[in-house]
Image (cartoon, rainbow, N blue to C red; front, side, top):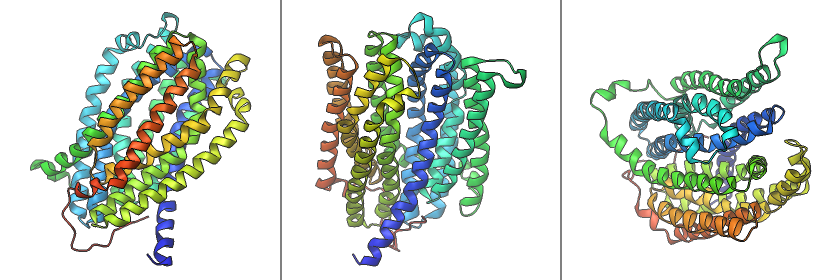
Length: 459
């Protein structure tokens, strides 16, 4: 590869990554803003919403299997210069995820109390949890469509558009939270209900804007008329990637629910500390998450263009970059751990324990980086089943089991839980690296070689 080619590849990765990073940061910040502003209202509300968000996270994972599958399929068709088929996949994914979202939203609204009881939410926190889940969960179909539109835009290389919309949604959410929690101008204080409404309304406005952008960005009108003959190939390919990916993500989130259930026996303070510490740590792994998603777009387009050697090198290079960025951020966050925890609470015990958990980030996050980068690349190449099989074995056989043994049986509490996280991420990560280097994924693409083998990277 020439120096100029390397330079172009570097620019492509950077151009794709930084908007995804900002968008992901803002998405995470949306939950952090809720937590931070609720912490001024009630620590009990923070703990309840933290548990309730585990349920909402499962819904988002379920919506994500269509969005993720669509994004990968679209990126391969873009790489193969099959723009019409890319647009048909987009239409099918939007309709399917809207219907799916409406069904799951209705079930969440109707059975919210049963779900929260299953997660062992303490009785005194139940009112807060119900307020949040019935609104945010009941309207979560909005997020289902947002995820699909964003995935389609990113797969075409338009990563900045979703970033700008995320900025707008976060600004609206923060303003809404201020109005409902602090009651300026004589407005009523609505507490958790107000925060849930603020989150849902800002997402609805963001969805409208994203749809307008999608119509402008996709070459030609979206072929809605293709639904009359329904392109079954589109749904088949989406599910081929999406269902295994959903299985892995669902397994991960269910294992997190199981671990949260274990932590609930350690008391409200432990639940609150977990929420605060993970909110801080989210900003560390966002670097590898963003690089992984950008690499997924590149690998998908390269595989679609039959340039699998370039795809192989791109993944490993992205992994090295992500590892370096994550380590630097983990060091910085560890140095200022007490100050960061102090943003959320003035409870010295929570600050001390949370600071210890952030220190363990130095070991945890490099292991997580393997999974975020390599699993994204494996999916983009069509190898979606292997991460599921290994993920289920590790998440439940290591993460949940070790969390119980170390956290409860050995009495290490949250530190024991973090040891379980570290073991799970490193074992899975090294398995994924071995899979990528085996090159077995090179025979798993589902698009025939294009006539023009030049990968299209509209970054």
